[in-house]
Image 1 (cartoon, rainbow over the protein chains, first blue to last red):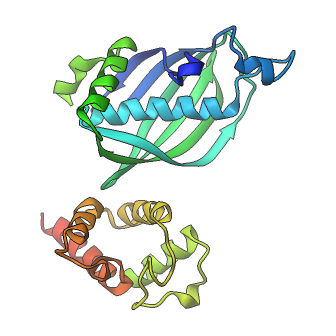
Image 2: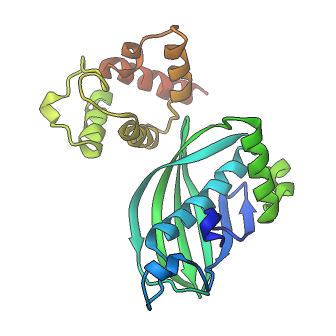
Image 3: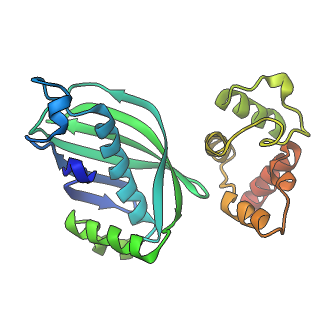
Length: 157
Length: 94
């Protein structure tokens, strides 16, 4: 996780365009200025960043399902539950599945597990639009390469 | 069996904080009921799921933006219900 850059996914572990699911890994850094405030002497991964991690995991799935032609923008969380504390150094496995692909919007269900135990989950709605600019799309493709998004799966989708 | 209108009213009342008795067939979802775009996504999700269709919201929006259609054609509830019935019929015929 690169918290200061808001890049919360380290690696895509699996993307299934047929089953419409994705799984990603994210390791909470041991050091971050965020932990100086959240909280002094008792560092905890902020819940909003766990929500964002689930959103980014879902987002990569949506980008993959559209063949990198459309960009999801977060619109709503429903039934978001933060079930356990997450601390620096922990390894997160985030998983998302597609619930509904509407016209211009997509709904996903996502969760994060630590050592097999679910620590948070939510239903997430995204507005899905064409990439605003080619440069934006190119930058997302660069990030995709950096997090090992399996581009070879797209042609089979 | 509930009519399309009754089903849509149920969805709107469950999704938005709008009293049932204010929702009429001639109500405009946006102008009269004050449903914003985010709430309309929830409503669209529920309509898609309930009727097993995919409302072409992007196409409708484009038609309105290009002046080829009015918002009344899609967002006055009795018209919306007609569109839903058409989509359901088209799906059954496919």
